[in-house]
Length: 401
Image (cartoon, rainbow, N blue to C red; front, side, top):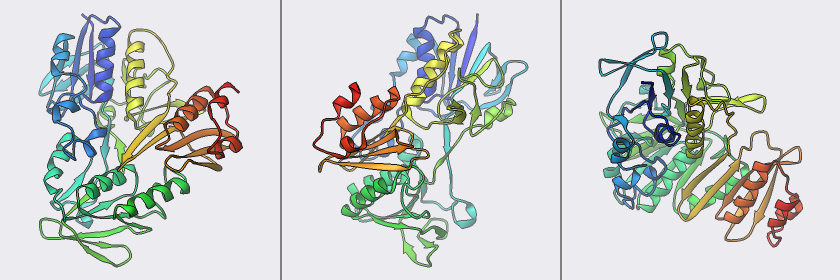
């Protein structure tokens, strides 16, 4: 009987194994995860779950019984120790499992603060897994002071939850502005103002020099020489693809596990999908860190493990929830040279162009603008900047142009 092993029991791993069964694969399927919880949603962790608005069981992507019903062997709390690509075996818990095809859906890992600046003190957290959020939840007591390191979406979402919980929040970003790596000045300005209205102290162009405390963090010294007394720290300084097992297997890496358009790695029997995988696009390579990519790429890999030989064409979109603002992002703004602002008062969107062509949209409480922009981008169509800038203009005719 053919055996497919999937390592990484997150969104991508769950989607891949479910799709295999939906496609009619009748061989053995094993899904291996390091965490003790069954595959779960990550986005609500730092928002609804941390706020106590979502129960733990509602995080789960599927009931645990689903895997038994679909004859998917779910191994939780299991760490893979070795992959022997030549022998086609995986060692987990001291047991050697043979595979016919293997998929790596190992996701990503949070960057951590260096021990040299106090990063090993107690009271310092990252926002990545269920155990991370469970560990930090007791810290969220009204009136306490949290220092957030990093002004990307992870840091800003954590700041929003902390502010809503009544904490004093200071956020430091060593770049010139928050969201500098991923968004326009206009989008940075919008979210800086939003957080300021909720009492968050945002300090840009300021880094962390060192954390203070004996055993547990009690303060911080910043790069501008100022010091803060803090009760705990959240590090939102980015993530890196989890490539350790791929290295053990001798696979090629390139900003993650290098795959072809079908999701196949440098070993023909091994595939990769999700945050950990980089794939060809527009003459280069990209790696996407998003739920939609994890699902779509994993399901495509399942198709290709069954012999479909399909190329991955991503539908690129992301989202972020902060306070009462839902940010929806369509496309990638890499290399933009023009931003057109559509200001509808309660709704707002920023449209990115490169050489006159629409490439991305940031929509704040503007679902109509997001929907039209996404459909235009997916279809390779353009949008007249004059129409976009006129908040009274109907955008739907752009779809017919």
